[in-house]
Image 1: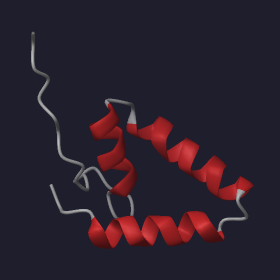
Image 2: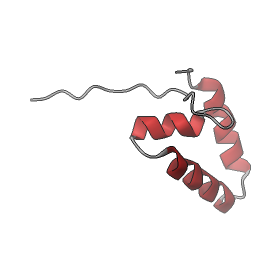
Image 3: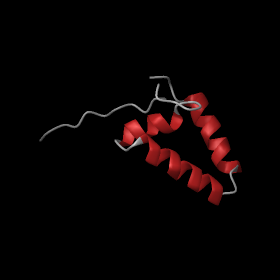
Image 4: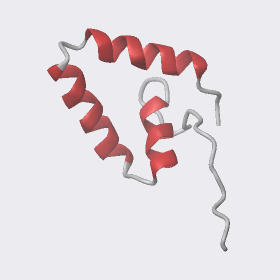
Length: 65
């Protein structure tokens, strides 16, 4: 049985603001632009406030790359 290596969720150096979306994109193996667009879309649908709070919390608790 092959063992997959688990990557740690960290903030990316490819950042616009805090590197949270870049870190999530790297962790999922997705394009960073797609994650940023999805984040903006979900934030708009949730009236931006919860999305902003979640982003700030992740910015604080996610370690730097």
